[in-house]
Image 1 (cartoon, one colour):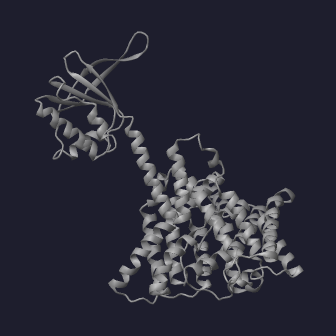
Image 2 (cartoon, rainbow, N blue to C red; image 1 turned 90 degrees about the vertical axis):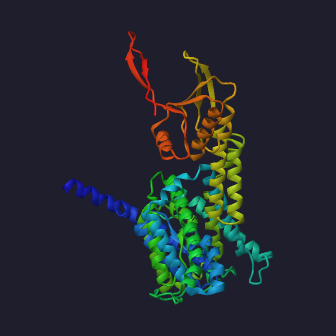
Image 3 (tube, rainbow, N blue to C red; image 1 turned 45 degrees about the vertical axis):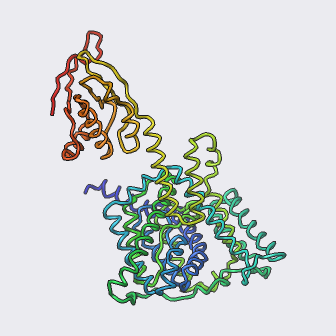
Amino acid sequence: MTERAKTARGSGWRQEFGLTSLGRIKTESFSGLTVALALVPEAVAFAFVAHVNPLVGLYAAFIVGLITAFFGGRPGMISGATGALAVVMVSLVVNHGVEYLFATVVLMGIIQIIAGITHLGKFIRMVPHPVMLGFVNGLAIVIFLAQLGQFKDNTGAWLTGVPLYLMLGLVVLTMLIIHFMPRITKAVPGPLMAIVVVTLLVIGLGLDSPRVGDLASIAGGLPEFHVPEMPLTWDSFMIILPYAFILAAVGLIESLLTLNLVSDMTDTHGGASRECAAQGAANLVTGFFGGMGGCAMIGQSMINVKSGGRTRLSGIVAALSLLGFILFASGLIEQIPLAALIGVMFMVVIGTFAWNSLKLIGTIPRHDIFVIIFVTAITVAYDLAMAVVAGVIISALVFAWETAKHTHASQEIDENGSKVYRIFGPLFFGSVASFFELFDPKGDPDDVIVDFLDSRVLDHSGLEAIDALAVKYEAEGKRLHLRHLSADCRRLLDKARQTVEVSVIEDPEYGVAVDYEGNYKIIGTSQKET
């Protein structure tokens, strides 16, 4: 390796980890610290949702966050325990216990590693833009709704009177500091400054406002290696297998969509397959260290990006800071008012929601508007994975329907008296019905040519349509020619010879010459028949 190559490689490594300058290191470190502060109540809340000890959620946030920060496919993206996974875990924990959960997380990690090795992450490109808009809008609403639970007291009743006004006032103050802080200085991220100011205000004035410590104590030790205590039987394996597949799918979908979102915001690219493998490795390790598993967190990723975090250093700092809170600073972190963290998350909601999607109404096709609203609603009512899968299916069906409308043909009689149908548009399952309507086997002459120069046969339904058309003409005692089939279409027909037969497949070869004006034109043809 040349000196120039070594220098470029070293520079790339430092840039990826945010070690290019003291200013960048400071920005990434402050951003990671801000994320860590916001991670604490989220991890604790999701642990409660999954019916496990709060430390199980905190350990997952630390381990998953650290491993994906080092090896993930998207520098600057934050991973940890998430609500999307927590809701799937509930029935497993309630019915079988937390040890089954740890084993499931290990198997989930293995599945995700396999997905990374086999490059399944590339299929995220199949998610249409309307689905992405519905995803971010739905997730913004989910994040907003999740914060409303903090406006209830210990009995589950909504706050009223002075406690409510105090909470709202602190939330608004937090949001104002985050909004105006960049205009004053960018040396410290707005969310971090807002958390510090509001915390000092509450402690200094002795205000009676709910704090992180009211949720649960976050004090603990280092996570310890622990093999899940589950019977090694086929029945036990079949219990955890469905959960592992669902968790792996939900985790990868949320992670890859977050990867795309962060990439769009930062105008950079991420590695989908690498992210799948990193998520899998993180969950595999987490399961052996008493964590509940995790995936990418869009809320914390948005906080990181908004605070200036762009490299792996911010994620590493966030994970290590979270561990530091657990080991050494639990007492201090537990004093942070929940209102400050709610204000941070409300600003995330405002920044995450695709407000421009509201302007699209009336300017884009109605089916795209429907997909956006549908995915948003399903994300809020059920979960992200179901919403994305349903959105992709609906988009695919709409695309097939709209594409099928463009299948048509021109007709002419050539110099030999043969009728030529020139097909335009793809021939596939959605356009088969339209394809049959183009022909008149009874009224056509004895020799018919179907020209596919401007068409393609895309699937087995298209092959069957050609076979059925050939049968109709054969029943009328007429001869059917297929002309200008592309190489891939011919390969499909060759593979389907046992089920598809036509009279003649022609492969015209055209010669090309240049006339006296310098224009290209066809001067003759020859035909090969098979």
